[in-house]
Image: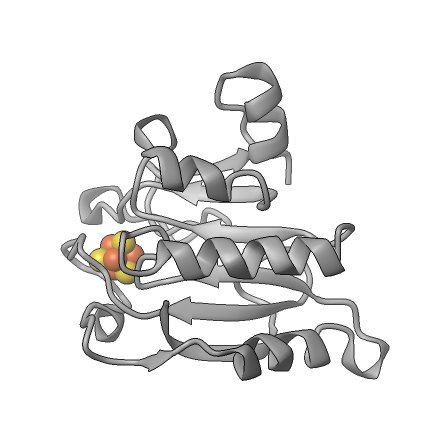
Length: 166
Ligand code: SF4
């Protein structure tokens, strides 16, 4: 998995404060994307155990409680997904009470087998590509109104998409 940056005290991508990781590489190329520097699969850096340790070392630094957000780029494309699964699995093993938010351009109902695997570890999924004609900057955690904030645990239990209550 490659990533472009890690932000320690992010207040824009989750509820409260998060450690946020932007993966590198995106196959979707949505028109009007605000993050096109993350498209290039040749850019960014390989995510290593040192980066994982950095997240763990900072997750509760100075007694500030942080959750984890995984953004892109595209975390769930074939180039990044194995590393994202490993990250989310390891994170939940160490911090089962913390929330993992994940943004993807793919749509929940069309996930492949590996993409379904990541759902075991995350809590909140924001799905769907950015659609410029549906751009709306007043809706929380999303850039366009087609995107959904999904309660992953409840959706898996009900075998149907359940929207996350903010
Ligand atoms: S999925 Fe996200 S990062 Fe990729 S092109 Fe669309 S808006 Fe940009």
